[in-house]
Amino acid sequence: MKQYSYILFLVLLFTSFSAFTQTREELEAKRQAIQKEIEEINSIIRTTETKGRSALSEYHDLEKKIAVTERLIQVNNQEANLLTREINVNANKIDRLRKELEQLKADYERMIQNSYKSKSDKSRIMFLFSSESFLQAYKRIQYMKQFAQYRKKQGEEVMKQTKELQELNTTLFQQRRDQEKILADNRNTRSKLVRDKSNLNQLLASINKEKQKYAKELKEKQKEADRIDREIDRLIKEAIASENKKQGSTAKSSFKLTPEAAALAKDFAQNKGKLPWPVKSGEVSMRFGERPHPIVKTIKVMSNGVRIDTEKDGKARAIFDGEVSQVSKIPGANVVVMVRHGDYLSVYNNLQKVFVKAGDKVTRGQDLGEVGINSSSGKTTLIFQLFKNTTKLNPEQWIYRL
Image (cartoon, rainbow, N blue to C red; front, side, top):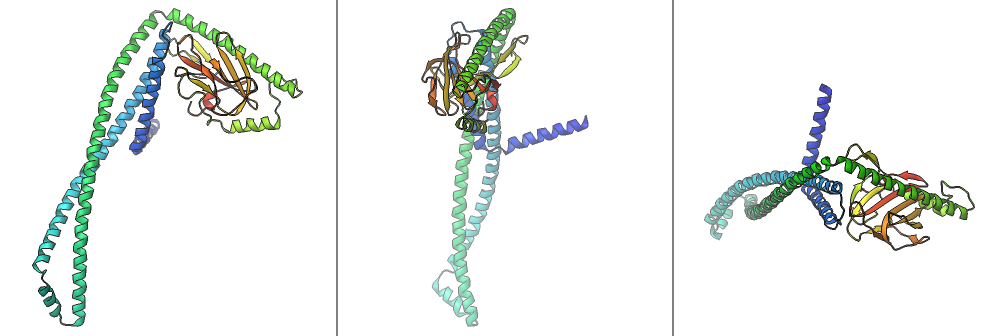
């Protein structure tokens, strides 16, 4: 138990140290990224068709927004704390500089006064003529030169520290303004968060009253998703058989690769984890795999890909170079486009408009079609899947920061 406590202490200490060592630029970049994420969520919610929209969808949207808002508050606090430390450091530095500058000015003033008292040419000549030897006269000349240089250097140092002090005061003023703005933003964000949490609790209460209704609704949705997945599996096998027939092969479960296709597949595999999103911007509303529903825990939901909610009229785009293998209309799922990358397939489901046809060569980032509305959520949603031959892959492991 003691060992566990010690390890926990080290973890917390390391976490605190990591947060402390973050620069303000890093925190500001993180804050802006989270704010952009919130804006995207709000944009998706605003453009969502509310007709027939389920309370479960509303709950999911609000829950996502709350989670992101809490992250924003955390980063705001970290940035405000960092500014507090910077302000304290600069305030202490300003106090020290002021004291040093006062001393420097006093020393310089005494030097000028002493120089003024002995500034006449006569006194300087007498100072030289009173030398007992040529060597002593030479040393006195060098002393007068060094004294003049030292006085000039002291004057320059006074000017330099005065300028540094002015710049520090300007920086400190700006830091205090930045901190006040962040704290004001945080107060507003917290107020919105309180309202959102209140709305979330009300939604949850209404859902709990009709759990059986929502459980039935989820089962029907899962049944429909399973039907669409079976149709996609059939289309993939059909595409494999059709392509292999051209190569003189009867294999139905894996592509027979030409050298060119094998090279493309290898290139695709080497880009695992670095592939771009299949839409320009959006939020993942359902992840890959089987898991209990986040609200109705008794129901398990299964997804063979990911669902990404995007902006209205958002475009699906190719994640890699390849060839369009299939463009098919699936009842209840709009149009599906399959792009082949050697023996890999990227599948773009729920398109309401299509810009490509079977056999077209496409490049990474090329628009394939316009994403359609999900009838159950009212959102513009792309259902994206990845396969190697007929094997389902988790897109989250392939797409960058999905």
